[in-house]
Amino acid sequence: MCENYATASMTRQVALLRGINVGRSKRVGMADLRESVEALGYDDVRTYLQSGNVVFTGKDGRPERAAQKIEDQLAERLGLDVRVLVRTRDELAEVIDRNPLSEIASDPRRLLVAFLSSSPDPKRLRDVDPADFEPDAFAVGAREIYLWCPDGFHATKLGHAFWEKQLQLTATARNWNTVTKLLALADG
Image: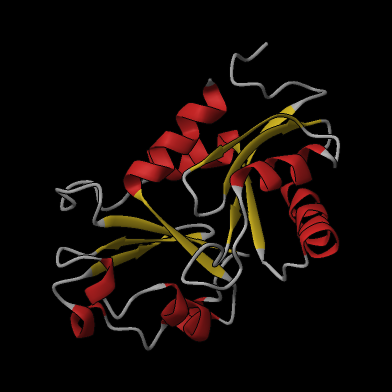
């Protein structure tokens, strides 16, 4: 039996909501968010920061299904049209373990992971030349893009909007500190 909540009947998961509590639109309180996820039957629901990070346990370990249920619930209960990406605890641990930018990323606040709604089409990456974005750097993962932004995320051209347009996928980014904290919450 694993200590990480992933058993045959229960799976620890992390929901990443795209674009809530940014500016004045799509405002949601974390208590309302927790209650909405709990109302779906998920247990041990925890939120982290105000930017739409929810850790929860459920019987159905299919992240796509959990994402759709949470999206539908937020629309019905809170009137929010929000995209939700979900990773299992083990998928999130793999994202951390596979970090290809660990050798160059010296500040975890400037290392980001843009989580993607599905695997990127390699054809859509062909024309993205890393040299065009220096000093920023990126590496493509399974369903994520790792971003090193030494001048900060707000100065980069490689934000989630760039990747959404380039890849025709939904993307939502979290800095490395948040990614590792979410795994710790999933383990706790």
